[in-house]
Image 1 (spheres, rainbow, N blue to C red):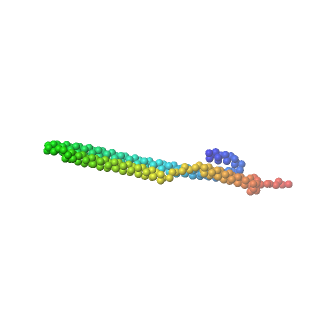
Image 2: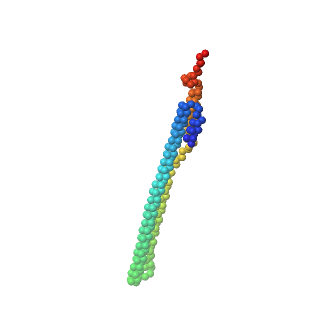
Image 3: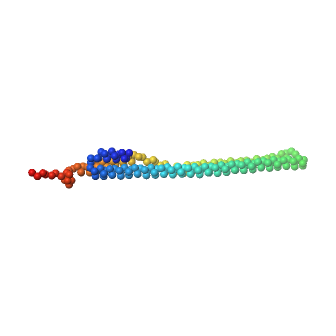
Length: 211
């Protein structure tokens, strides 16, 4: 586009004098290249800002994924531990009830006292299992809250990075247009001077023939 513009202007200014054409085209070329270089620098900065934001978002997501995996592992471990302990408590309670029942039968003890003893063992088992279940649920709830906070932190970290604005090419076009207009003005100035009929140019001097 720039080469075509310079070529068209240069062809139009062919009759304005050699020095005017050279200076005008040079002025336009420098102005156009300067405008394009400036736009390219802005685009490079914009692309770097986009890359940086994407990299930060990627790192935040990776960190969040690691936290999720760690929390899920911890939750699974705690649940497995609670289930194992619960099974052991149930086995121990059943064994204690069996021993108590056998001892009572051997001793000839029957009735309410035996039922109270067995019921007491069952009650202890139930309270222990309930406490274990409560602790496991609280641990899971705390882990989920930690994950939510981690997710909000990751989103906030990315949101704190400004979204870059892609530079417009319109100001570059304006600068190119101004450079072209300025170059044409230079061509016209020097072209007008060279065709003004200055007597300093021997080609334009008027010689009087002898009479």
